[in-house]
Every structure is written in structure tokens, then in C-alpha cells.
Length: 265
Length: 372
Image 1: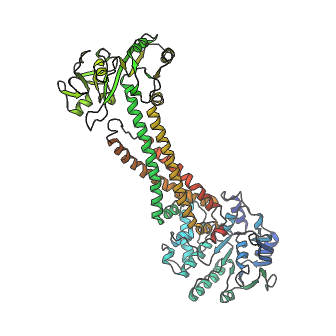
Image 2 (image 1 turned 135 degrees about the vertical axis):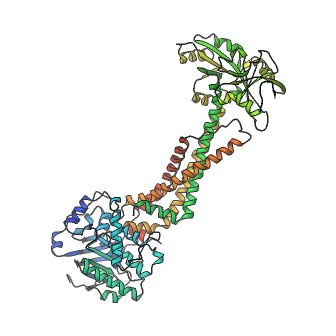
Image 3 (image 1 turned 180 degrees about the horizontal axis):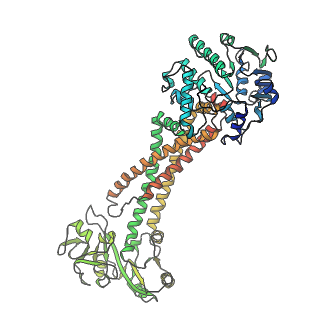
């Protein structure tokens, strides 16, 4: 991994600089300055009194959620279907906005980030239950599409994508289409894609939901190696208690609330 | 991997859809280019007669649907000749005659022999006909070649057998494909004594052409003066209608093409909603999604334009061979035809793609990801 072309490590000065100098995207940029208190506390994710009410039907998906995730921590969020765990993950990924409350990632309040595309590309990596690979692209191309466009960096992008696939034990499968990969292999390609820009935080929504037990074990090994090698913070939503058991900490949710997460644990 | 690679993969992945779209674009391009080339070809053929006379301007009867239906009395010709600034005025009768199936619209020009030189006619072989001869004809060298005739041959036209007394050149394909008769003879064959179709005017050295035109138009308001092909196009109502119909059909083709492209793109993008949601979720900007969709449209437009221009070559050639248009329509493709085709394809694709592309780019990624 040390040989990988350096894009940037999120949260530090390089990240701030990269955001400031980044290409024009959906907005003039950029994230607000990192919150020093959160940074000092070593928090990767901070959720404070978050409420999410869906306008259509007035469903209160989240009802005053508080959550802190330290850097390099592996947190599993569990709970029954419809308890709000995926909604919480989507807010952390800036795919949605809370009705009230604050969500900070790497010290940045997501409400103040104008260029959300850049945030999603560089600050967080997303893994979905259904890998969501593009069927017309090969494994290596599916990883490359997450990296910023620049013809000048085309070769380094491809090299980095191959390297990530090798880390996911998919060396030799780079040119294969998603239809030629097993479910577990596809999920590992999805992880490689999520890590393409060296995000500080990996957010996974039911990533093992469609995998067999052997693939789940391998997936968890991958996550463990990720933390060892890259100190990546992992927030994973799951129904599977065996998967949750692999985490440093499990947060339980019910009816839009965190029910038994010890504060600051 | 550059964006163009993804564009190519996406287009290639849905071959049947891409082919259908490219063909829809191609047919619209073919329609626009063919109609445009045919319209221009008809105008070129029609205006070619103006160039035969090598005059400063031409005079026809005002308000006739087809300029070949113009009738000007020879007494008017005398008044034109007397207009200050006019050096010469040559009155000619132009008629068409069906010779055979290959020559359904053969041009016959009635002109006095003394006006042949001012009219720009060069005798290549033989001699001019006599002023009052009733069975003599001169053939343009292309017509002679076409019919396999030479000086001394017989040429049957207007129900009479004429002797070919000369072969001429005008330096203009329209004139060189025609036959020339003594003016009274052609007037007699067509029962229009004392009438010419148009008058070719040359002005005195140093005289102002527009001033002379103005003087004639003022003194003889029943006449129109024509100096350019555009003026001809405005005076000849048939040509006006043909060009208007061609323009209308072309606009209709573009609109129908744009609707087909838009509908197909919309359906295709609807199927790919989740894909766009994913791209937005992993950090693609709206601009990048727009570029992807528009890039796919652009690629299909270029392919469709190429195929469409190719098809228009075939269509125009077929039209040229229609018995009704043989000899009338001379199609010439220029670089303009390709650019016109490309522009048509681009405009049509832009119209058809912009809305689906904006929808894809501006939909919430979460909403799109949940789409089934």
C-alpha cells in the first residue's frame, strides 16, 4: 500500500488543501474547517441529536440520535428492519440531510459542505449490500471510476486500482466482468472501489447480506487488514450478530433511537 | 480509464438500442441532407439557364409560378433595348420537350442566329441555322454526344424532322445539353408567335447595373429583373414551393427524430437510474453524469450523421434516376452536405438528450439508488 500513488489522507492538512484546490464540481467547494475539538478528541464521526423526518408520510426515521466513532474504530450498528440504521449511515455519507441536529465527519459539519460530490469521493467510502458494480465494466474499471477524472493520472489510477484488487486477493481477476465473479468477489471489488481515494471512513450498509458464510469470514478478514494497514474507521450496518461481534463496539438502534450505546465508548 | 471508454462501453453494451437510436438519427439526417441537396440541385438546374446567356441580368414576367412559363412580347423587347444603359437585349424562347424516356425534359432554346454570339454560343462544328429555317437545329455538344448525332444527322423534335446544322458549346452544362432553333420556328412549334420567355441584358460599359434594372422595372412593372440565383429562387414560385416543402419536411424530420431520440434515451436512462445513483454516491458530480449521458448521445449523433449522409447519397441518386426528374435534377454533394448532416444530428441529439441527461444528473443519489 505504501507504493500506492498518494491521493491524500483525509482529515489532515493535505485533505483541506486538496478540497480547496479541487476541480469545480457541484459547487465552489468546500468543507468548513475541521472542528478542532472533534479532531482533538480523535473522532472520525460525530452525530449530535439528529432527527430525520421524511416529508412524505411524516415518518420519524431518526429521533434524536447521538453517536461518536473514534478514528480507526470499527463500529457495527444493528437493529430491526426500519429502525433507522441505514438512514443514519446515509446521513454520514452525505447522501441525505438531517431534519435537525449535526453530523460531522473528520471534523467537518456536513451542513457546511457545499461540494458534497467531492466529500463523497474523497472523505468516505461506501459499500452496499448489493455490490452495485457496473456490469459493462471490468473489475479494475469498476474501481477506477471512483477516482477523480484526469487524463494525466490515467496510468496511476489503473495501477492503484490493480493494487487495491490485489489487496482484496483479486489479483488475476482484474479484467473479469462482474458477471464472471462470485458474490464474495464482487463485494471485495466494491470494497476496493470504496477505498480508491483512501477515505478515512468506510461506511458499509449490510455488506454481508448477500454473502455465504465463507465469504463473510473472508470479508471480515479484509476489514481487519484494512484497519491494520490503513487505520481506516469502519461503520457497518448489519443484521448479522456474528458480523457485529467482529466490531470493536456494537450500537443498537430501535425506533429511530440508539438504545444502549454507552456515551463515548 | 477515460470517460470516453465508459461512453463507448455503455453504447456498445446496449447494441440494439444504440443501433436503433443511430438509425433514427441517420434517417433524419438522410431526410434533411437529401431534401437540401435536391432543393439546391433543382435551383441549380433552374438557374443554370441564367448563366448560359452570360448577361448582366435577366428579365422575366413577374408573378409566374414557373419561370419557364414567363411570356414577354417581342414589342417589349424593343422597349428594353431602348432603355438608357442597355447595350444588348437578347430575347429567347425556352421550351421543354420529351424526346424519349431517358430525356423526358429536354431543353429547347429559340434564338435568332445573329444573337448567338452575344448569347455566349460558340460553334464547334457546322454553322448556325438560317433565321427563318423551319427544319434546322443546332445541338449542344453534350446533347449531340448523348444522342450520338453529328452535323448532317436528323433530329426529331416537335413533331418535325430537323437537320443538325451545327454543334455548339456554351461553357455551361445546362446549355450544352440543349438544342437551339431559329426563334420563329420554335415559336411556331409551340404556337406562341411573337413571344419570348426571357430577355438577357448586357449593360453599357460603365453603366450601373442596378440603375438599369431599376429603370426597366419602373418603366415595365409587369417584368422582374433577376441577377442572382437567390432572386431567381424568389421569382420562381414553383421553386419557392419546392424549397419551402423541403424546409418544412426537414424540420419535421428533425422534430420526429428528436422525439424518438428523447423517448429512447429517457427509457434507457430510466432503466439506468440506479447506475446514476451509484455514480453520484461514489462522488461523481452532476457535470460528470451530464457529460457521460451527453457523450453517449454525441457518439450516436456522429455515427448517425455518417450513416445518414451515406444514405442520402443513395437516396439522392435514386431521385435523380426518377423518370420525372431525369435531366431536371443534377445532384451535387459538397462538404456542406456533411456538415449540415452533422449539425442536424447534433441539434436533434441535443434536443432529445438534454432533458433525460438533466434528470439523470439532478436526481438525488439516494432516491436513484433505491430505484428498482
